[in-house]
Length: 190
Image 1 (cartoon, rainbow, N blue to C red):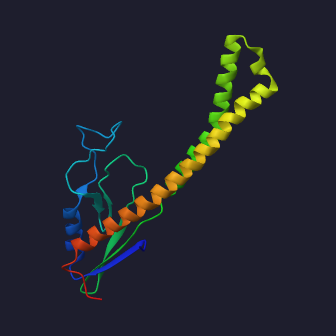
Image 2: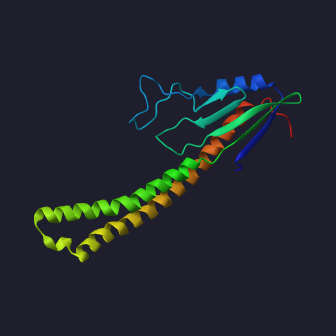
Image 3: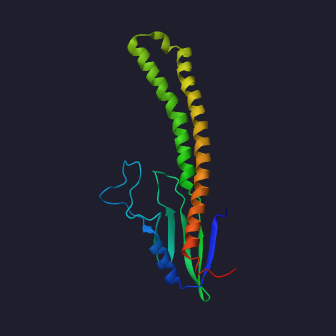
């Protein structure tokens, strides 16, 4: 599926924006429920898609079924064109996704082994065992969690990348179909 969406419509720009606004719930958290610490974000409304229309620009996404930092958003603009208007939209790559994964991996690779080594050394010191303070004891206490962290990072990367690709394709298809269906009766032939 392409990351770009172009639809030529036989209606005015204002009518297209009105249809978009009517087809989605405005993205804003319910003030009585909020979204902090909840497993499922609670947004006002019941429609399957949420977003916002501002001027001639819009963004639409599926209502989240669970907390996710990897929601795919369709952003676009409605421009006048001849006897109607044209919707030009796309699914931009969100660079924070990559940054979040890199920061998570660095945190696991750098912080976890040293924290584990420090805890093991502290436990050995508190128990009065001086063998844990030797070089071999420290190396073992650092290398074991480091190896476990590497295995965990490999699994994390594989899981995030696999799930992210599946989720992105699925959401791109659903959002694009939703927008096409909003305008299927006024789409120009061709």
